[in-house]
Image (cartoon, rainbow, N blue to C red; front, side):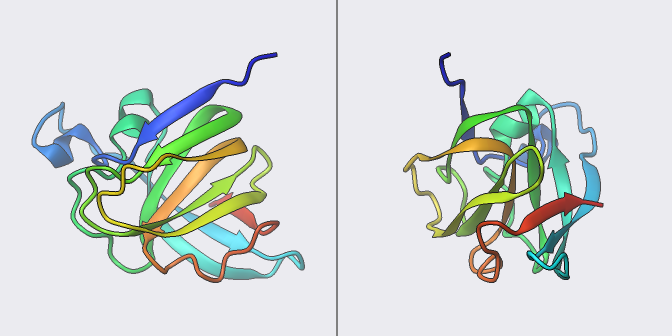
Length: 146
């Protein structure tokens, strides 16, 4: 069975943020991180990128994220996923979670504009926050959308 690879560029939160598109407001929610003892230790306000355009545009051209704010990219299916920070003017942390919400990888302080592909398997969602904001998050923790 071939692995489906999703190439996600971290672009605008919406086409409207880049001065184009329909001007639709992205969905807003919160995510919470819990550890193995199911104790919540972090909560972020997030915009949701759940359609193909929003997933591909991501954070490109977006102003730096406020503290405890981010973008949650929700993929249509779990699989191998690659991201890049090309076109983003600030450093980010990326938290990769599987379909159960378990954190499978954390990439920290991805440099502004970095075109390097970062790929991980068994990914269903990606939380992108400002560089350094995910430093407490560990593989095996859980990411829960509230």
